[in-house]
Length: 90
Image 1 (cartoon, rainbow, N blue to C red):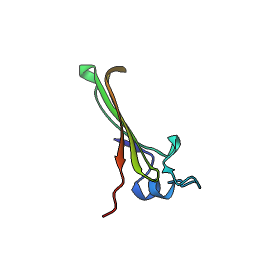
Image 2: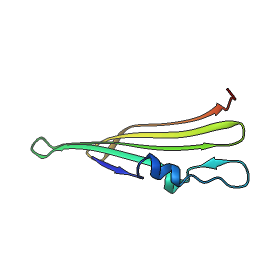
Image 3: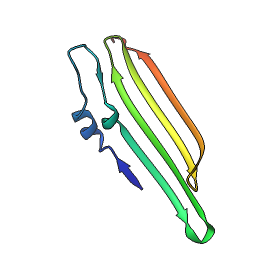
Image 4: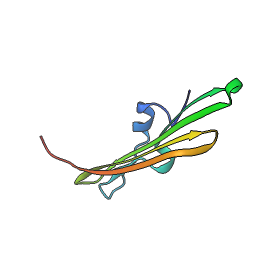
């Protein structure tokens, strides 16, 4: 297994908050995760890759998540989900 992008402390340490009141992880600071399995004798090679970015503005939390599944280098499945979640005060 390989993990790129660092742990949560590393990610939060790189969270940027410009003067506009918006905060987000940049494209280079998102969280990437790749898991691959291979069995050479059976010519079997699969990989799942995810990418997540989080952010916020003054009214919403914003998430952007991607999932890609591959077999033998061929993409079999892709999904991207973007959400805006209202910020509420408790």
